[in-house]
Image (tube, rainbow, N blue to C red; front, top):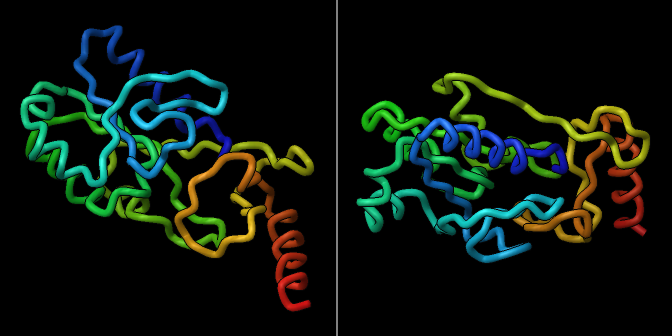
Length: 181
């Protein structure tokens, strides 16, 4: 988290549109932190998008928009249960360029959604990193600072902090000790 994934996605979308490419931008309906039907970066850059429950909905219910799009940009990709099937069909069968932004792991350092499943079929992968909120080293993980054990909890700095390995381990241990008291 806080590595600039959405900012990078929107930068790529803008560059492709400047080249005349027709782009459809999608996010999960679960991400309503800033706006229900806009993708918004942590620093306030915003753009209208389709907020969907699943990606198949875009192809089936909005077939004309799907057909018109040369590029499909998906934010918060980890939240889509049909991510792998949609992306491989869009790229392999329909010739679309698909660009994703999302998390590959959760706050417990476990697989999150289907993002990792797409690495073997991706043309390229860019893994962005934030800086640790505690020491400014390279942040490898997201530490949940809110007391909630569910895998899917949408939030920003109020619920998560980017952390290096050292701070992930030490702060996670503190949470375990606090939970047992």
